[in-house]
Each structure stands twice: as C-alpha cells, then as structure tokens.
Length: 456
Image (cartoon, rainbow, N blue to C red; front, side, top):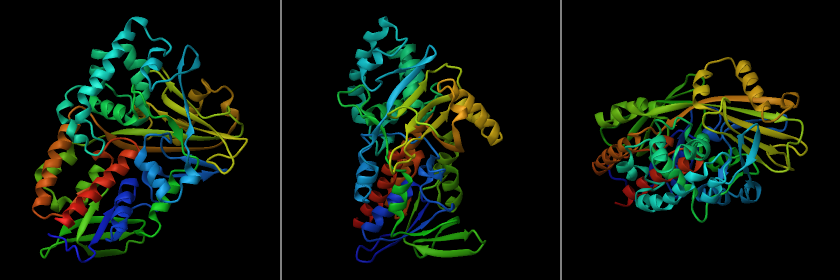
C-alpha cells in the first residue's frame, strides 16, 4: 500500500509504553491521524509507578544517564525540563568487605581502583579503548542489528578473555546488572559493547548516572496529552484489508468489541503479544523471530523511609558472586517538590536474575521481608524506618548470544515487506535494548520508517 502524502493517514499505535508513545507523538506532530491502544489503565509501561505516602514508588530501576540525549531532549520539548532536570547525580558504591566503597566505574582509572582489583590485571585495561575503536562502526543504538557479526561470544567469555575475571566480577557485571541482568554467561557481548558506547564507559567523556527530579511517568503523561488513547482496550487481532490498509479488532474493559480501519499500524508490544495480534500478517521468518525471543524476570522493590539517608543519592552494587539476592539498590534522599518528601528518603532495589526467577510467583510479603533483610545488611536499622513498600514483577527482553543475528534477519524481512507495500511497523525493547533511551529510540525508528514510506 502506498500512502497518499496529500491526505493525513490514519495510524494505529498498539501499546502505550515509551516506545509506542514516542512513535505516536512523532507521527502526530508530522500530521498523521493517530490512535493509540493501551491494554492497561495507565500509560508509560515500565516508566510507571504509584504515589504512596508522598513518595513516588518506581516500578523499575529509575537511574538514568546524562548521555540519554534523546530522552532528556524529549523532556525539554514536552515542557518538563525545569521539573525533571538537571539529573540528581548518583554516587556508585561497591559493597565489599562488609561496607560500601565509593567507586568510579565509568573510567578505566576508576575501574583499576575498584576494591579487590588485582594490580597485575591493571595493564589489561589498556585493551579497552583499542577494542571499542575496532568495534565502533558496528555499534549503533538506533540499529543494534548492525553488530550481528560480533554476536558470537558472551559477556563472560569476552571480558575474561581480554580483561580477566576481576573485571567481570567487580566492574562490568555490577555495571550491567540493572540494565541487562547478571546472567553474563549467556548475555551477548554486543549488549556490553552497545552499553559501553552509549554511556561512554571507559572513554574520555563518560555519562554520569543520575535520578530525574520528578517521576519519569510525568514524561509519559505529557507525551500522551493531545493523543487519542483508548485505555484498558486490548487489541485482539490485526488483519490486512483486501483493498489495502488494516482492520483492528479490540475489546475494552467492559467487554465491548470494536473494529476500526487504519492505513498503517505500529506495534509496540512485547514479542509474544506482537506475534499473537499480528499473526495473520506475519511471514514464517517473522513468527520464528518472535517465538525465539527470550525474556528475563525482573523483581524490584520500592521502599519509602521516614528518615533521611545521607545527603546525596547513592547506589550500592553487589559484586558478582556475592550472596545477596539484591543486585543493586539506590538510596534517594527527599527534596522539595521531588520524588520523595524532604526529611524522608526512599530505596529502589533490583534483584538478581536467579532471585527474580525464584520469587516471581512467591507471595509479596515473603519477598518483601526477604529483600528488606538483605537491604538491612548494608543499611542497618532500615526495617524500623519503613513507611510503605511496593513490589513489582515483570519480564523484559534478554539479549543472549545470537539475539542480534536474529534481529539482523528480522530487519531484512521488514525491509522486504515494506518494499512490497506492507505498512506494519514494530517497536519496543526487544528491537533496541535495555533502558528507557533504547525504548524511545525504537519508537523513533518506527516513526522514521513510516515517514520514509510516505515520502517514497
């Protein structure tokens, strides 16, 4: 189907996470007639959360990166720059020997000063800039499949080969674990290389970690203003019309069924859902891609505390091999008109992959008590200060060895189908990578593809 550049095309965006909202926002600004379908009552996906006792309780890891240029620029474009920025700097710490040690993991000098680092392995860090220079041309945050030729080695194998076991246990696994998990035996080294380039890890100008001053959910809400969003409306199927375009069948929270026609569709759903609703439109290669997509469990606990915990935000990381079920947690002192009230503070803890899998279906109170005990190891007296807790469970994409080669094959199929006139586009974490910036870039990519097809 060829889109008429003179007539505003009707576009359906399925899914109102950050990738779907970004695509819808871009297309709406370009003059398209956009409708968004969201199965949940709230938009924003992993940027969601809830206010409890005056605290914003995040549903996922809240720390951002100062090099998240697209996300931060979007906040400014939406008029949130004064409320959310600048980011509150977060000091990373490594828990070792019974206490937290301040570390500087973004620089090679900082990595070499990590507690427990063997002095004899320091010289190996000189390989880092050479390797990053060698791979730089293949690393593109907007098109991660370009690194498919590098996707034959795991993070563990890559790091141990070039930098030694200590770099894996004390530096890079703790650095990666809140984004990609700690299953580095299976995680593709492309995930590490993409992360390192995006953050400037080991470079001259690394990104600095920080917390937004207001919930990231505010960005989702601002992006949704002016968009036509059908909340609590689940898309059952997407079919191609004989005369061109697509028909979407949906059902709302009251069970009311509806159908509507669109010129193009952007699917911003998890892999299994994307495959299910568009099943009649997919080639065998596309179905195989979605069927092979892996996910990892993520369990996060947000804790509101009645006392102030320090003067500035701190992140505590546990080294690979530490017995704690917690991978990392961030402590955020409150501030005026912030995410936590002045005079109080809050914690967001992210569990290790194995603990998340084990507790994915465990009773909330059991998990919360276990996690609070683990946190008390590094924050004595914490259990007596708890005001509220909020436990969230989710599954997110896992980029194992081979995932980027599958992405490259999927991208070739998408190009072929677009050349034949199919105006179905895909966005979401499983096409981009971990983190909010990757999700937004994925939405950008889908919007760019649709805009290019309209101009063709």
